[in-house]
Image 1 (tube, rainbow, N blue to C red):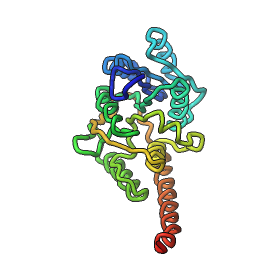
Image 2: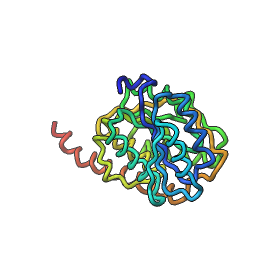
Image 3: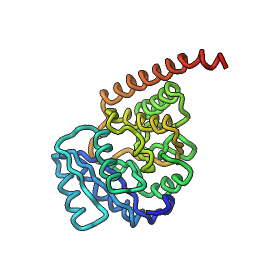
Image 4: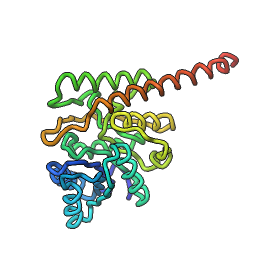
Length: 254
């Protein structure tokens, strides 16, 4: 595995699934067309609709597709961490987060991977110049934009789309982060990892993408996921402020 920006070099695209049978095959086909030498890891949480069985069928005929079965639905964060560990154990240099529902366009992968030449984490961003959202109701757009603004102010980061779920990490980032300590889910998981990446001294870049709301299946967004993000980000923000105040006397003495 050589240069990260070379899109012919294998990277691992981690796709968590739960009842995504209707869309998974098409997404993997598009990934294969976009990254002919890329690899896909489907992390299925015991989908009752047969998603795991479909993934096994695809893997049986394509050596680029791999499947990790988990016994039950344990949340997005846990699925991604299991996928990261699988990929790190097999020495992939780049690991990508991507949804199975078609909301993330595989055709954006080359631009995201190319940006890793100047950053350690690259986010496919809806909220930088050139980024946009298609087919979202106004309420969902306000929730997403508001959550990103809240996180940016609370955590003191400049990332415009810190909740983005389409992103690529250098393996060196995930190797340094304390994956065992991460229990966040949903929006909060994405915020958690991006913020830990920044605090660990790594660089973050954002690449504009078009996010298209799923046409098949049911969104996994829930009130519990939103509440977790609001409360946890608030705690992190207060702790950040406490640390800043504690360090103030030392700065004044200089």
